[in-house]
Image (cartoon, rainbow, N blue to C red):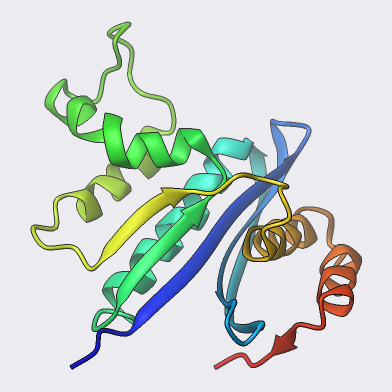
Length: 173
């Protein structure tokens, strides 16, 4: 039986850093040039940061990998080195050090990182998290950025332009 592979792209955006922010997680099928699903959110209740929005996008991707796509193998792409290294390298050490960093300070974004750790503890995960270069003509990443930016500014013109210029099909499931 063939394993179904799913690719999710996540991103976060913030105006002002700190300021108003938006995040996204999209399922983009590059073989058919189709957006299959898109999840977006914003945080305008308080002063947020770009890293917090990036983490929120990843949390959504992990939630989807372990629920909606639990019978698939999911690759989650992020253009944030901070997010990828947090999950793939630093989080286990931080947990073992009572959530403190090398300076013996509480890790930044502790509330979100602790949520990430629940996914890190999965014995046999059906997902991987990889770094993708940001703003390097990777359509999945560009779409995730445009969705996140649309939440930050309330303006979807960048998203519409990418969809039109690349003849992308919308087939939200």
